Image 1 (cartoon, rainbow, N blue to C red):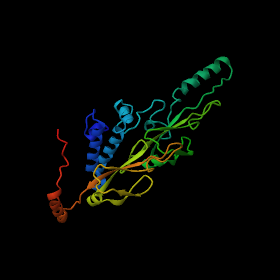
Image 2: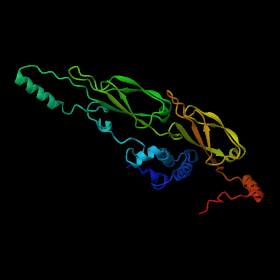
Image 3: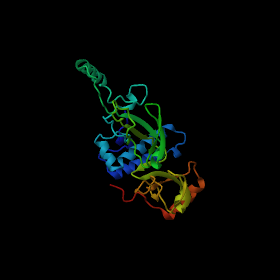
Image 4: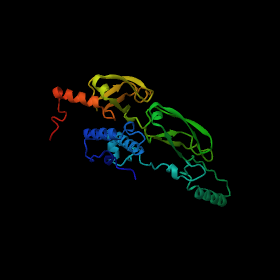
Length: 303
């Protein structure tokens, strides 16, 4: 059973958007793979936290989740116009028998009519629809891709995945389903495309979200650093005096442009990380610095 999204983030169902953002920041920082190298449990928890935030931070997705329209992974609940692919029977593992279950009775009726009238009956019937399930990577969904699938008849077909494709969306391929009978048109193929989560990136609408660990000196005095994006690494300037939670925008590095839709942006949330090893010089410096520059970052937060 999939873990409840509010439980993943540790918030109540009536949590505000700010509470959800705060909980995500805390959990993501705690379990970030870069801060827990080789820890598979932390990596899995981080994936769940990112997936939960991706749904609950989006008002429409959160409404759909609360209404039971999508599941805890943000996927649409199974549709009824074709059978679930993994349970389909037949020679092909993705083939659906939708539209063919009653053909035995239909042909029996035709045979009886032929015997009764002595004339040859003719039936014209549209072919049944058939369903496929495909997995693509997060980057393929963001940037678009061409994927090759094997159809029910053994033929292959190249399918274009448009940039910005969302998890669970269905592509309809007209005339690529089961063949018709008696000259009837072929049915359609429905390809349900699922997007695998990414260990670094998550998505909000057409923007890509990423958390970037930065060193103490980079945050205090500023720096130029390399940041991963969905289309390669880019250089970004961290302003002096940056802090954990500050978000920087990289224009045009989100979901790729499509038609009249401009490319989204990448939102980089900074996370200041102290050295793992104790540093005596840093400690002595800060003790001396605090004598004349002490401040209370918790001031005003009481109550």
